Structures are given as structure tokens and as C-alpha cells.
Length: 327
Image (cartoon, rainbow, N blue to C red; front, top):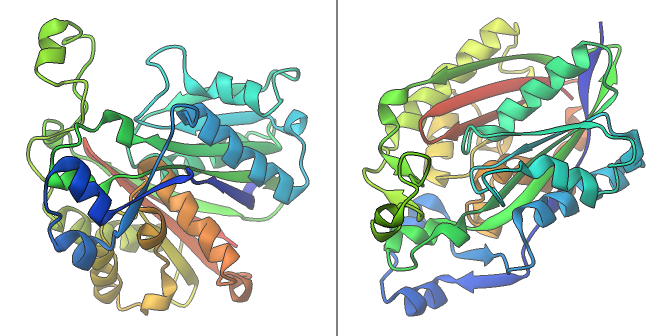
């Protein structure tokens, strides 16, 4: 049996930075201290018209390939996760395949959309494809351009930033991939999203602003603060992991205080997680890969050889997915 192993990572950060005071000036609103004190966001990156979701995804993918000394024509599968696609159809992944120079070898390329839960879900999917034995190199890429869907008139929009993150996985004789757990509760479907679709694709839908991100009812912090520990404990039991076995946990970067509280609930030290919302803002499908990449850059994973890494991502709708890899 083949096992998936994480080989390298890459990110793309848009060039334009918008500070909190600039956001307030643009929107005519005042940012609640909650965003700096609880969430941890002081600025955000705004993609230009040229920095499209597929462009950002391809740049992150190119970095991951370069760092692993793997060429694009060696890639067997490309999975792109986003809920801010460049188009409803065709999918983003074939465009990314072309942009990185992999179209000549025609690797399978497709999109997934579990909103911001994409990160852990794609790692799990990639591992399962690799286990079939036909895929040696698999690229998973989260790309996020939510600022393109904002109305720029609400204080809560200060949360969002743009960017992309990629992880390259390869097949290996030893784990690697250890397992995953997930949960979905569709009763939250109407709380938050971009609700323009087949049922609302008309002028009335546009007049109602359904093509913009709509926060109808905020998710309470307890959704993650209670759900995350439950999933991690379930994952640890499934994979026969102890607290000592777990070297680092990477969470969806949506609220720093929630991450800290979850680590306390798990009785794990704060140095077993890593946050990047203070650097990059909230980047949805990309954020967990960006956190992993930044931890690598900071040298935090050098001491974790043989330990396990956990990726846990949450998305509106809602979905939560956790996956474990031996590092």
C-alpha cells in the first residue's frame, strides 16, 4: 500500500495591503476592537484584477514544486479548493494546470468546494488517491479572493483577505497519512454565504445583493470552540495518537482566541499550534496551508520529525474536517 507524505508547500500573497485605518476610511465604518483583540487581524491583502484566483493558485503551486525540485509535468493530480471561484464553470483546476505548465501531460485536475473546510478535506482526498497506487505527486491548492465579493460597507468585512496556499504530496512506503474525521450540519446553511446561484440568477437576485457575501446570522464562537476539540480527540482515538505524538495542530485561521481556547481545552501548550491571521488576515481555503508554510519558514517543524501534524478546517454550511499526517 502507498501512503501520502507531505513534501513541500508554497504560498502567494497579493501585493496590496489595506490597514485597519484604511479599511475604516474606505467603508465609513469603525472596526470593532474584537477584530484585533479576539480575531487577531490588523490588516488584509487585497488582490488586484490581475491576481485572479487561478493566478494566485498557480503561483503558490509553482513555489511548492520548486521547493521540492519537482517539475510540473511530473504532477499526477491537481485539486483546487475555493468558494471564490474565477468562474462558476469551467472549474479553476484545469486553468491552474495550464498556468503551471502541466497541460502537456494532462494530469487530472478538478475543484472542490467545502467552503473554508477545503484545506483538510483536500489533504484527505489527495491521500486517498495516492493510496490507490497510480498517483505519485499530488498538488492541493486553496485559493481565496473573498474581497472581490464584499460590499465594502460593513465592519465585519474587515475579516477578509486574499491569497493562496499549496501543498505537494507524494507517495511513500510508510505513513504519512494516518486518517481523518469529519462532520457536517446543514442546519447552518442559511447563516452566511454568497447566495447567488441557479435559483437566484436574475436581476432581482443582483438587486438583493446575492452576488455579495452576506452575513445573515453570525456563527457563535462555540461552533469551533466545542467542535474542534471533539474532532481532534476523535481523530487521535482513531489514529491511536497520544498528546505527545501530536507535534503541531493547524487550524482554520478565523479567530485567534478560539484557537488558544481549544488548545487549553485539549491541555496542549500553545506552542503546538501556529497562527498567521496577524500576518495575512483571514484567507479561507488557503489559510491552513499558509499557516503550515509559515511554520516551516519559522523553523518550527524541524524538531518534529516522527511526530504527527493535524490539520483542522471549518467552513460555512457547515463542515469541519480534521486529518493527521506523520511528519
